[in-house]
Length: 172
Image (cartoon, rainbow, N blue to C red):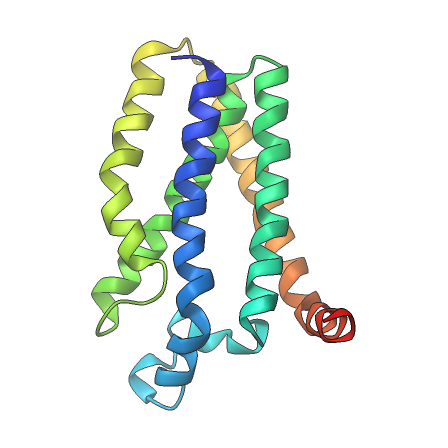
């Protein structure tokens, strides 16, 4: 498979997972925010960052653009390490959701698709390593750097969530 194919698979699996979050996060927060058993769950603990479904969708839209730019740069630069690094960051994100599925009762938003897409992610990752020549040092460095970029971006979105909500309310 080509680098472009792996980049497409990465973004497609990422968006399936993110759509689940867009659809269910606000309802989940409304249902469980007063239940002390969920106090430390990611969405409940950070509920101030998710004031509305529109803000969640806007933040995920921005994450989608960042991921596409990173993946596109990997394709343009013919860097399977760039595509694989962002794919690994995505898989690590899913592992956190799977962990939460075991800790908290029921299914948190994102945990269903994390569980159900993990076999596809594992197969894709195996296919990358089986069919591509990988510079492992470059892969490790890019995984750390790009994971940090994605996490810093997410923190920025959290800090701006109130402003995003205000902007959406003004233009809606």
